[in-house]
Image (cartoon, rainbow, N blue to C red; front, side, top):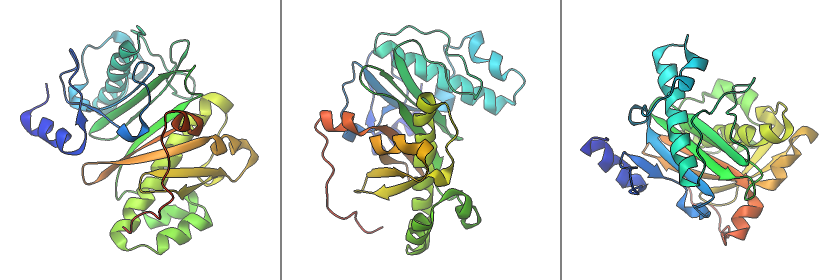
Amino acid sequence: MASPDEAASCQSFFRQGTRGIFNQCTVMIFDTVNLPQNVFQLALRAIEDCQEPRYQSDLDPVINAVTSRQREYTAGRVLARELLARIGVDAQTIASGPKREPLWPTGIVGSISHNELYCAVVVAQNSVVTSVGIDIETTGRIDRHLWANLFTQEETEHLLQLESAAQSRQATVLFSIKEAFYKYQFPITRGWVGFRDVSVHQEDASFYRLTAQISDATVASNVLAVVEPVGTDQVIALVVDQSVLKATGNQLSRRPAPAP
């Protein structure tokens, strides 16, 4: 059970999940996406609150890892099973593939991410979406010396126009979107896509489009990214089919994004 302070912190930034037995600090995220919850579930939870119920299969792939890695891995599986149950899927074991990707039950697509504090999971029926990708990052860890390996020239020029604080946050946002896109595209292509193989373009305060820089990344034209803050120093990015967002009535504003 989350402490009162943790629960208050969650409520200050997100809509608190209060259904049934899910009474821990489980936060439903990306309300703006407005996808049908009977076939599409997203949630964020503190890693420490996401350790039970645990199965041996949650430990076997990381049995020789350090304790923090074991807890992160376990948190992803525990939360994923809860969300799968919400859409009517019973999955005690969510194994890992050769690239450490989660192996979802038949008919399911999903994605798991974590940082040092939180675990984020998205799952959906593959009759609704082609794929999904999610990523959570702590702001301030994308140093400028990394930019040449992560960002296109256009993205770098955009970052250089920003003030220091906005620059740090936006670099984190771009990185997180690209991480989420990799998770989106891998189940489709089974191939490697590098950070500079896609370019990210801001459409609105929360929405971003992606364009491919190489032919192997052409699925980028089919997606939208949605970004939300987590507290004051973290961001979370979701990449999903843009056709699904249109089908649910979400319309991207064409107003310029607000100044940082």
